[in-house]
Image (tube, rainbow, N blue to C red):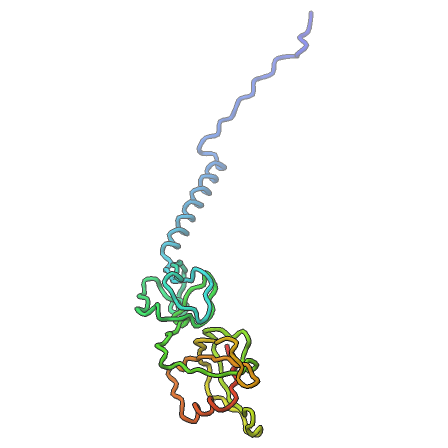
Length: 216
């Protein structure tokens, strides 16, 4: 009798069909549902965040303010931080185009109301004749400076220097001036704001050697 070389027939393996009751399937469904719900909650939270003004690109101190500088940005702020920055819903100053940036602000940064100053109408602007070696070479519009006066050529060197102006804003940093005697000078214009100079202050600024120091 010849034996079948393939041996006795094997029993067919039955496929197991997983039903919806499979714990692993239920766990996967739960994870998907949970992730979807979490994503929806995050989206809702972003929609609820307030919109604040930020700057579209870098701005420099002394640069005129323009509505084109501003762009709305959502931020979830609270407490003192929420009151510090300008909300989009708040009304912008009517004289926005007459303002200048009081300091440098990086692109994307939120805007504080203190970030800009009134440009003024020029009635409080004071020109100062300054020797080029007596002020920062890179002095720029919008910089804050202290102004000191001291002995000039031919003055008594024992006369002490004194500060006349403190933290005034530069309106025009001037440029390399023409020769005055043997010294190159620059005419720097500063904004006095609400300051009132005395006659003695004006005389000192006109007759004595002026030194400008940039301050934060």
